[in-house]
Image 1 (cartoon, rainbow, N blue to C red):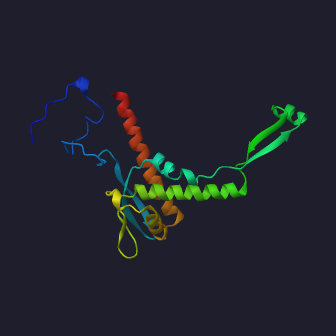
Image 2 (image 1 turned 90 degrees about the horizontal axis):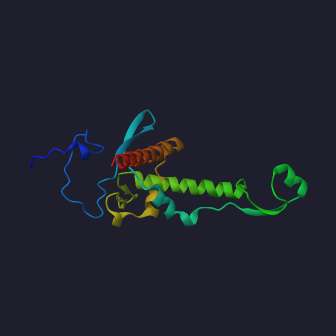
Image 3 (image 1 turned 90 degrees about the vertical axis):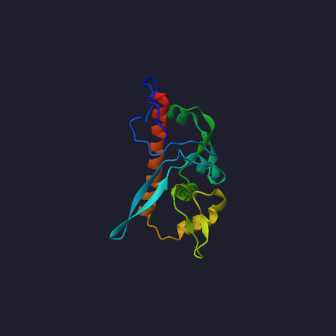
Length: 189
């Protein structure tokens, strides 16, 4: 390795105090070298396992499920003059969004669960294999990512709600940490 020239103080950026693990000599399309990696510990009975995780683009996951996101029912309600005075609204017909409708609450729960499974799928830095041993999700190779089969595999693993929540929360926290670090870096630059 060649001797590295010292960076002048006026060009110092966030991270200069960290040891250099690798010097990058080229950037290649599709290689997510800026992705943040970590691990999550999950309690399984009387022992703990550790899973490698990575940050995810949560907005991308939301976009992927945009057509499945439920809309709350909307109702037209007539507000009488006396009621309008008491509540500070105008009298007449108004549109009311009913987010407490039982059907909507259940649809929202199903959507949120599916979104969290998708975040978990994209955030686990491990291969997923079906019962025949076929790789249905390779986090490093997009051409080997069968989302439907992978979600089926995840659902079949027998995770408890606590385990599921711990993994998703760790992925979201890692993603948040990465975004905050990038934001700090851009503020200093």
